[in-house]
Image (tube, rainbow, N blue to C red; front, side):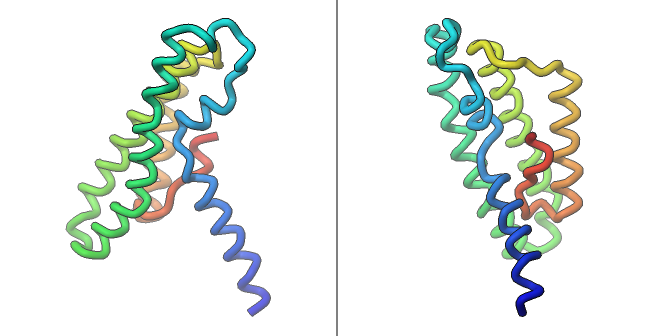
Length: 135
């Protein structure tokens, strides 16, 4: 039983790291002393980021629930929805970084992280949030 404790702790840590949206992580990494941070565009971008946090949290229970209730039929709709939510979150995070003086990712970098999220999400059955792709 002791041997199971450490792998379960590692899995739980990975799951909890994936709970925050990319937008929330971007807001947390901004320099709040910069002049861009106080601009109206930045404030608007930051205040509108809550929706991505809520959809990320809803995705954590809605996807597995749909898979449980509907079975394998729900795999494609759950996967496509997950990719859509991740795409919107990554694009909003890049918009926040651009408006607030953060590190803006190129379109290629954004596409790569979205593709990595989608691949890992499909590999684990779209039921586990993926923490490694959002670093």
